Image 1 (cartoon, one colour):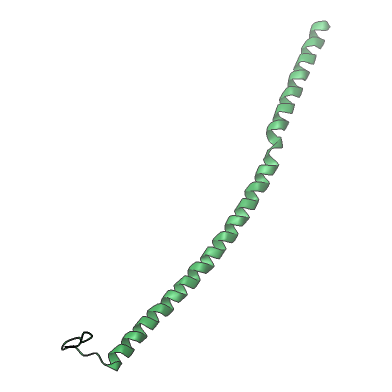
Image 2 (cartoon, one colour; image 1 turned 135 degrees about the vertical axis):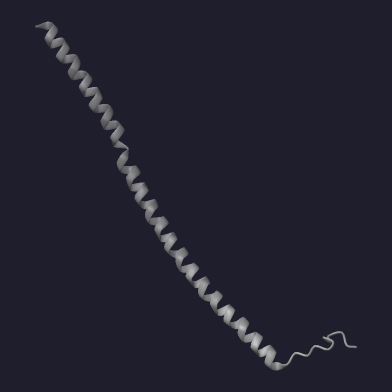
Length: 90
């Protein structure tokens, strides 16, 4: 008995062809899904870059706010002191 024998099972060219067509169809569907996934990934990368840019712009525009608030508070304190001194001196 040869080593590559399948015993009483025989597989013809038609069965091999049908199975090959089935596998080919599955590969084609997989290829389409891979292309869709690659397209979605490219969109996500673009969105991520856009969000990073927007966040950086917001961070850059935000830094003066605490400084401005501190300056306004300091100016208010000076005005309050000057007003207090002016009313006490009169």
